[in-house]
Image (cartoon, rainbow, N blue to C red; front, side, top):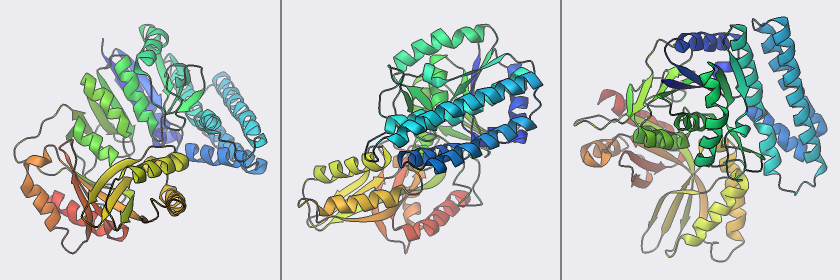
Length: 468
């Protein structure tokens, strides 16, 4: 039996036009595969709005969070009114959405009654996944209206995680047991399940989230538990690109990539994929395709067990923000690493990923990566807290903090092609390099620069990729 898992991002479900594309794709692929499993994200911007409203609730700002919830209700109800739904289906869907939002408001009331200093990551996770629940119900209703048997499933009933709220890790064994018991029987009855991405729950049933962009991760988990043949990620771009097209207009689609290459590309800032989704697929050798929901006829990018060919060129360049710390001394680095880890946990609910560390006789340098999922204000917030924490402790007071940019070039087995590495460094003539590291995956070369030199470095390296 062939099974296809398809994940649709926020841009794929946010408008009537996009939803009609989703419907067309499902109708077509249902004829090509024995089983379909759909995973959906919240509408564009909804998760950010829910994060803001949760923080407003924690501050006791009732007017603020109620205004956001009212706007979200208006947006979803307006979308439903545009869709070709029958009166009964539309009324049931509207009632379901009102129930979800009413329950969420109840959680906000609980949050607003708590002292401002009370940690509430569990309550935040209980609310910011509501966007996916709303989207799943809309998609399932639309499919049913076209006589496709479909049901919306909340991943809180399927994906079992630890209790690291904000960035939970699934228990694959328990999750597969749940999926096999509660989802696979529906496939045998020719039902197309529409599951919520991004969210899960602890063993005791408390909602968790898998980190920003976690719907991709959800799709890969469903794929391995359902023994899927392929996973397709539907986005608003044509595939994995040689650079972020928002930064470099001449970015090109990469037809094929290895699991290792795309994992590095996602880890170092490419926003198309969640970095953690690749591992499960690689272990089971399940191919992954990145496709444009508005151009379904285009092949997109195929990600599989590819191996590097002799003479293969550089494939992509990406950029991500980081924090650099320097000290006019050498010695053990573990105290500074532990301090940064505590700070990032407090500000972003994520562990510190050490990118590069180096020492000389008189100086030390450590660079930490800040994931794109942390949000645009993460660097500033982490830097301020770090400066306070460093100055408060005698053994870390010598360290200075500054933002940095990390440029990463991707190509499988880059360690076997020193001429390509030399070419990358040559095109950065005149740019100060703060740090340099070749990844242990053997398919990434990372260069740490001053933030103001990131744009020129990206352009120079991408020009090398395009004209090599």
